[in-house]
Length: 62
Image (cartoon, rainbow, N blue to C red; front, top):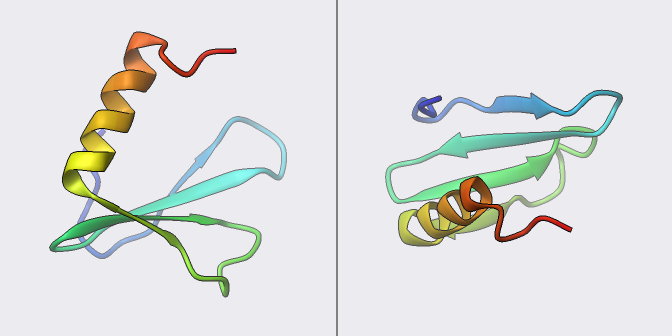
């Protein structure tokens, strides 16, 4: 899935626990959908790329 610019995209594994992600011109923002008023976590494109590649490889699996 490709993230759209300046639009929050919601991801849910089921239940009420959802994460929203948004792509801006210089970074990727991540927030808790249940607390949209709180400041989002900010990641550079390089950080986000590293994280998503690691996730696909199972690096963060428990």
